[in-house]
Image (tube, rainbow, N blue to C red; front, side, top):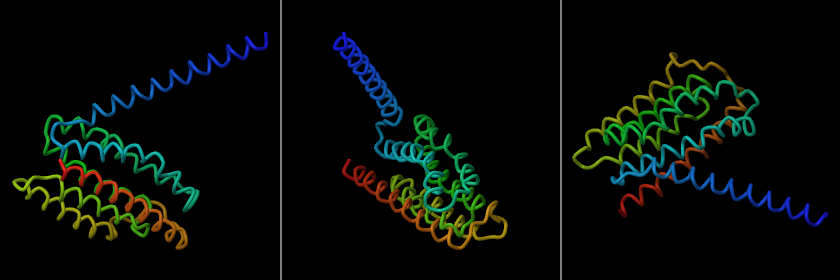
Length: 204
């Protein structure tokens, strides 16, 4: 009887694991189909946008672990999450708009972050991947869009240091040092990922 019960439990666990595996496979197929596009430039932007979306929920946890338990201002950065998630849908209708939205929303997120917890956190470093994306995902005939976006990134860099963006919450000097390390690591990881994606774009 015990053997039968153990066998039944093993069957239930197997069915549950198999069901979860099928659920994840189905979700992955849907996400892949949502990000896919015949234009490799658009597909690259879609992939980067969805990877950013997948990582944003973990950012407050990183801040709590590495910087401070005062993470309430960090949740303002979630305002950009649905915008990043909408990029593939926009790009499917208007390729240029979808590609331009990725660095634009990134710059907007930098502004929100500077207002939430201060430029002292080193959040300006995220303007580097924004400029990199802008420089790489437009054709030579669209170079004016890339130059305009890079110029806008420079303007954002100037604006975030102005008194207009006095942060909602100030951290201590030690916490800001840890914040800079965290943001430098995060932005570096994003730049590396963008580099891999764009190297695939050049190969294509």
